[in-house]
Image (tube, rainbow, N blue to C red; front, side):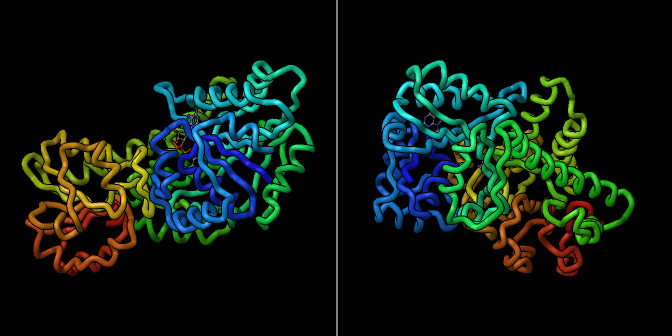
Length: 430
Ligand code: NAD
């Protein structure tokens, strides 16, 4: 099939590349000219495991193209995906202006039947607005269908997730569109769920909010564990063994971040309120998440007593491992707070340092964990990169000024760290 994907960010680029690999002819479109010219040169603007070889293979096979022009995508493609950003506004509402702009531009070039698929995460009822917009700006009598096809990929394992999703959700208002979507995804063997457009939109917001709730639940539990002397890792392990609860995302730490959970939870709170049902449970989820970062900073301050003039080493900047994405990374607010306290910060991340350089000017970036540890008064683990487990901590202890580790991700073993002579603090474990 011939497919256009408007918005060549994390979701658009991965969707476009994987659809090309399934045998479709795909044009990835973006209005960021530098991004498209980079991609045309075979360079990839993001770090995502497995993406680069797949992209190169499909470009070489002539199935994957890049363009700045929505018109080209509309003219050449039967299915047009909207995968632009839907960032949060100050009110917490999703900013839908990028979706609205693209919908209008698609409409202006629409000459014959097309399926227009919203892949961006949007509040319930956005599909109706997109449909209205297209109706308003397209030529009279041109037919189209609107589909909501939320994306569930996770950065860091996005290519795998695209090819092996737990389910594909397609919200339609017309069986004809469902049939085309079924054909598009036919090579992917998984559950194919067809709903109405609003239900599909809600499935996405509800799923992300539910996962964020599990994280906040684990964090609240961690705080109870700290007060009672229990161990949160043992508690969530015991809970997660019950398949009705499930072990995934039941993980205590420094709170969720990234480009999705914070914005989707607040957008869901806002849309629920606008609809007339204040979703108080999600307000608590948000509150616990914010509080968790503040509690971590307090833990660092408690162990260092005075931060002013001290050197604090940071391992991990990205909001989670295996990505260079820094959007809403908890590391950012934690580092800001410690800088305010007068600490000097040295940091290392395997992938996210380039992106962090634009966000944090006053910190020293290091080439490896050992350079971070040298002369540091405390070492903080803020992202659970696998390679941080393999560090020689005996060597780290020797080169630190004071051997203090505050592990925000419970990556290391308390007993081993204590035996090595560290003052070791983690989350929800005594
Ligand atoms: P992104 O910011 O990485 O990419 C969005 C792209 O859209 C950018 O390259 C931007 O230049 C482009 N764009 C904006 N306006 C445009 C226009 N008028 N014409 C052409 N291109 C335009 O965002 P993302 O992370 O890919 O997220 C996209 C959507 O998918 C969001 O709604 C997000 O919530 C959702 N989502 C993201 C993830 C994730 O893990 N990143 C997962 C599931 C769903």
